[in-house]
Length: 217
Image 1 (cartoon, helix red, strand yellow):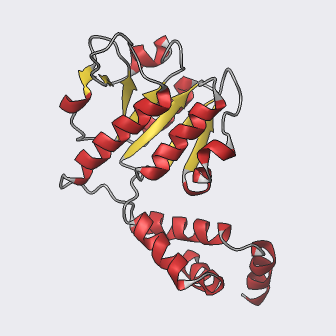
Image 2: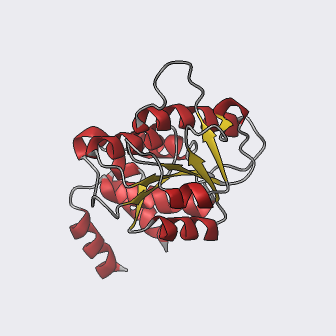
């Protein structure tokens, strides 16, 4: 059904657009995902989503218990159209859901017992948790994560801005992942679903076209 609808809808976008979708999707992964916990500054959440999109992370999980929705479309620069954003009210809910999907929970923290980024090896599916600007991750996440990692620093500042940290970690780990023999790419079904989603988002009169398709089929 999805493939039939996709074939129909692709008549309404250019060949160049279709090729670009396929090119981008060939570099997308759900093997690494990101979770953002109660970030106060709206632009920081949006910048992390932008980094996810830039480095091929297809899903981002946003925990919004304290501050509500934290996405700024201007900062994200449209990245929220291309990244799947899953929202939660509680950190425990997010962790349970991700573990249920086979993810290992990785707390990003400057604490001394964290693994250094350059020593961290991606072997299992991982969900990288990032915390608030001032206090970092909650005690709940730190105490219940499977492991933790930190970016090595040699200056007086203990931690980086969350969006900077996310960009550094995602660049390092996605590059490492793609150099392995792990099957990190999206499945054929996931690719079809995203092509369909992105194609719909690219057609201005999509509601009218879908109505016509349903009527004719």
